[in-house]
Image 1 (tube, helix red, strand yellow):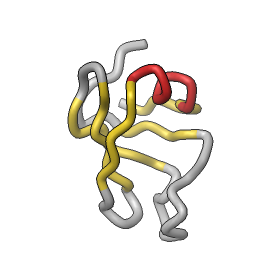
Image 2 (cartoon, helix red, strand yellow):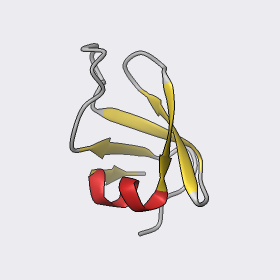
Image 3 (cartoon, one colour):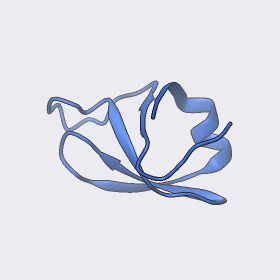
Image 4 (cartoon, helix red, strand yellow):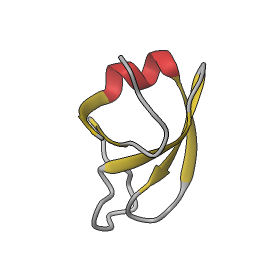
Length: 61
């Protein structure tokens, strides 16, 4: 699966911040692990590639 920086992805579980856009994440860093930013609250999380590829529902460039 090809994922680029600044791409918006949607994961199976939304971020618990309960703000609009909490289900969508912006990819800030790619590699063996990814840095994602919640589109609702701006919080950043790191996630391993293997886990992220299983969690992706939609990939919006």
